[in-house]
Structure formats: C-alpha cells, structure tokens
Image (cartoon, rainbow, N blue to C red; front, side, top):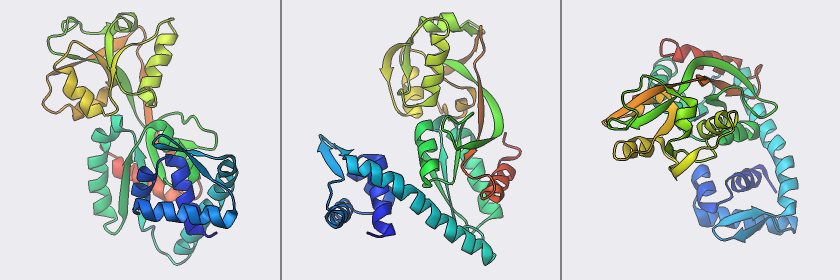
Length: 292
C-alpha cells in the first residue's frame, strides 16, 4: 500500500462512483478499478460493494478512510513546506465555488490571478456547499468560496460580501407588478428549485420552516443556468442569490427582493488552516478587491 493507492481510494470513497472518481484523478476507469482491486488484495479485505451504479463503502473502508485522509494531508503539507523552504510559490491552487456565486466572481478572479501569478495553475471546481466543505477537510481543495458560516467543525472563514435571497419569476408572472414579495407570499408559489444538496435550497427551507411552511416544489434542476433558462417559459418561481442575476443571459426574468423578513446571505472564503494558508487568503482577497 502506497500514497498513490490511498489517494485513489479516497477519491473513490468520496465520490462513490468509479467514473466520477476517475475523472477527478484524470485516470481511466479500468486503471482506477485495477488499483482498487490491487489495494484490496494487499489488505485482504473488501473495501466496496456495488449497489446499482453506485459503490457503497464496506465497513473496512470507513476505517481506512479516516486513517488515509490525515496521511495524505500530512504529505501535502510536507510538500508545501519544502516548496516554501526553497522560496517557491505554490504551483497550483484548487478552489471550490458554489455555482450560485460562480458567475459573479470567477471570471474576474481568474483574470487577476493570471496577472499577478502567471505561473500559478488555478483549478476551479463548481460544487455544492457540502462538497466544498468535505473536500476542504480531506485536503482535495485549498480554498472554498461559499456561504458563511461553514457548517463543519474545523473550518474557518473570511467574509467577502453580502448578498440576499431573491424571488426569480418570468416577465409575465402574476407577481410581476410587485416591488417586493413577502416570505408568506413566496411560500404559496410553485417552485423550480436547486436540489436539496445545495445551500440555497437549504436556506430557503429553513426560512419557510420558521413560519411553519414547506416549499411547494414543482420541479428540481441541479444547474442554475437550467433554472434561469426554464423560468422564462413557465409560471414557476425560484429563489436565488441576487448577484446570480449576472448569469441570467438572455432570459427575460424579474428579480424581486424578499421581505418580512429579508433573507441575507454572507459569502466568503472558507479554509482549513489559517496559519498555513495566510498567503493564499491574502492573494485571493487582493485579487477579488474591487469586484465585491
């Protein structure tokens, strides 16, 4: 058993799917499967069981995962320490971004980073909030950009800007003349929403629960762009961060502030190790300055 096999195992454990894990590792599916079989043979235990198209971790996999993650994290910390000792800057930076904030930040961020760190390879992953926090904890992401505060213990945050949840409707929707829409009014509307794994959806459900209501979910999509494209052709409504309006494209949509109460959103950098990542945090904060 070596570090490469552990890295392959962790990716498969987290993704639960050979195809997604192989894509994450830039590896072919047969090669990944072969490495996992070899690891199981060396350990003489079964690590995964198939259930339809998914792979379910066997009991031994849970134990191995909790030992493997600190080992891989320690290896990466050692490499970074040696690069810093040689006076080298990091060669790559893996950033997880919520798709609901991606369009308003990432293009500007990439351009600024290219200007100040032309040799830095920036890897952007559009993920749900829970995936960002999970990958930060396992060390497969360096920084996350998401809603604050982080929910997982062991993560820290640096605020970037404030946003608010808004109601999004088609231009001919019955509420088109309303300047604002109350939470109680919005609770009555049939909705096209992001899936339950997305933080925006969770925040919306939490707000409705506060007034004893549940969302009227008519349809779900896991892509914000698909929601924006679909709303123009339906009487369904959605709720999205106000700054996501920049991703609207050509769709004729109306964005209505929510009131009674207003639903504020705090967006910021999420990270694991403040001392080790201080330089990276300053780099990103500086690169985003003027865009917030």
